[in-house]
View 1 (tube, helix red, strand yellow):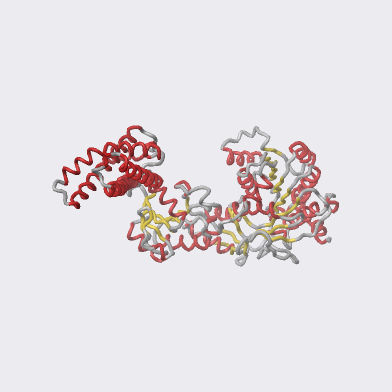
View 2: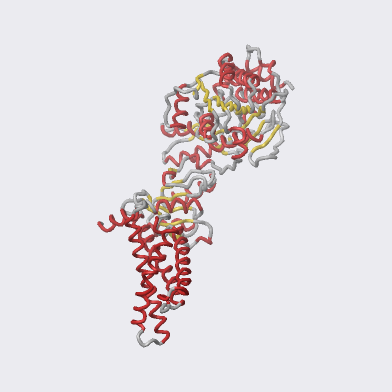
Length: 608
């Protein structure tokens, strides 16, 4: 234990130390002396010298001091003895090759000008130089092996882990674990479906076969956990792998989806439990960072509904693009506190960044636009709960229609460059108050985009977002936690789902590629059976919870639509974003507060 502790302290240090550099030089010099002695001896034996040991001793005594000096100077210049590279790294091996080549070349040149070298054949210099390079390289390789072995976690302190995926993500996470003796996980094997990886060993961890060999690998290694280390894995793959792992008695962990493994390497802190969202849908989204930067970087950006699920994620992702100012507007002070805390790690709510205001207060909204001068607006504020709005249609009119109109008027008056209205799939062929109000908001936005405005006005339409407040998943979880029953409106009902991160990335991209007056429809993947979702969540919970069919509510569809009648799915600029035209609507049709809000909305939508 004492030896291991000493090795751990020695191998952990990467800081410059004169003592370690001198020790390193002494070892390398001794290696050069040894190789020169052996090479000289072999050369004189080959010549049939009557006293090869004496001849060798004589030549070594003359030349080795010069070799020491030349090697020391070259090593310092190249950087070997100035700790330019981590000891035993591949970068240092490159430095050794350069230093050995230069040292050998200098000695060969000196051979022609210094009489001390006459007893030292050229072949000895070349052979000694090559042998010294091999030996000093081997010395560093052995040290690296010792360091890696000492730094590895052990089965006594870490959970044995199988890693599904021997690609870049799996290699990164395993390498990180193997260099951390305090890691809570010990990788004991890879699982990968690519036959070319089978029987390989990566960082000392063997590839034990494909998913069909999972149970056998679990039995062979004693692993109790499986890590799905494919950041781009979709829901179908995650579901299949997790079911196989769970049937083998293993707990399942995942790494989150990332934009690019080259932007930020995976670490053990990325490992997390499998969630319902992982099983329902996650996709790797490619966005054009340059396009987004062109209209967000160094611009004043306003997000309404900043405390909501979509709004808060918008704020977090927009902050990455360094806007000149990020203005977060919401009428919920607690929600503003949470989003500011999530971005900055502190939330005193004492900066101009957070704005407490209500869209229904037109005077306040116009004042905010006049004084803060936002250049880009993401309008995510809305009332969205369908059953509640069926009972209170006037509220939908006041917020979703008049509130949006107020924002549009303020944006036009203050020359906003880009206005992005967040809509919903319920606006396609609407049959609910929510759908009516959002469809009118889409048409109002198109109207402002088509009247010669200086700015660009577009809407972005998508469906249910996993993990958003009040979403069906949250309702199901609450019901399961309370022992059930889990209520489903119709056994055949389907809905579109996407993750918050996926939706927001596409919304920001849509702001870059949309044309004035368009509605951009995000690709939601395949619709998901709500009944099957409920059944999966109940199964994952391990509880005996019943599923109850309660019937469709007023305004609900069995199957949601992403496109309305006459809308054509065309994707000229992004494979996951459709561009559709929408009939503009003049603001004069919605200015008067209606006595019957529902009837008024239906009447407005019917107008060309």
